[in-house]
Amino acid sequence: MKLSKENIYFHAPYRMLLSSLGWISDKGINCEIYADGAALDSYNAGEIDIINRTFEERGLKKIIHGPFLDLNPGSRDRGIRDLTLERFKRVFELCEKLKACHVVLHTGFDPIFYKDASHLFLNLCVPVWEEAVKAASGKGVTIAIENSIDPDPEIVIGILEQIKSPNLEACFDAGHYYAFGKMSPFDALKWYPDNLIGEMHLSDNKGDFDSHLPLGEGDLDFPGLIRAVRKKGREPIITSEPHSKEDIEKNLAYLTAMEI
Image 1 (spheres, rainbow, N blue to C red):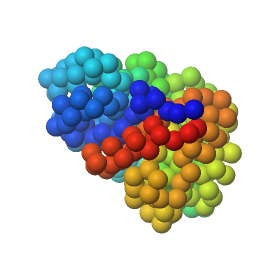
Image 2: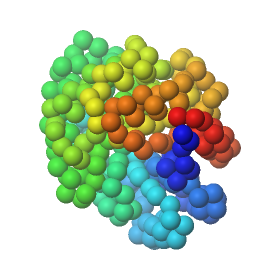
Image 3: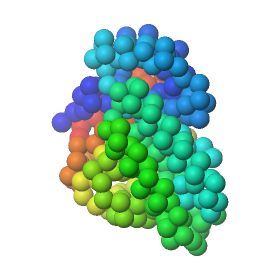
């Protein structure tokens, strides 16, 4: 079985998306739009209209990746937790404007500062995620929590187990586990409950850094990983995370040629 191009998304920062709408339209590329803090504070109605119109005219799909730099839903500082929730709510508003019902958000877990206190991080972050899920649900948006520099799935799974909601699921990033984890992506996957992985992020590396190499130029077994995730009971959104237009072409060729 092969992946269809129509079921593959490509990561696209908001400003890059705007400057490349013609190219994206010509290529017929579905996008996961990355809305960082600057994008959240600067987008306007005219930009939203042209994005929506372009995607609708070409029958393309879009989902959102929210901000993550400097945000921390499990911070020991209450003000940082409050700010993080505020930024999450801001991205849900953007989802509504862009007619996107799916958003990826990072755990924010830092294994350096919480190495021996993951339980504390989890206790602090769960109320933030509860409020986030409530706000997202009100706008018809599902949150997919992504592992970032997490050494294992403990925090992701802890959040999912404590907050039971149809608007909360996981985004599984195998490259992050390979670069930052203390176990293989396949072993990390065993932690995840069935039916809760709604999206996969695909980028390659050699285990030393999250280098976002084109698929097939690192060490990751993507066909095997996709098959393993499917056995968890869901057909996940497949999102490729290239860092250039050239790599989009390479990843698209790789994904549509591989047997899964």
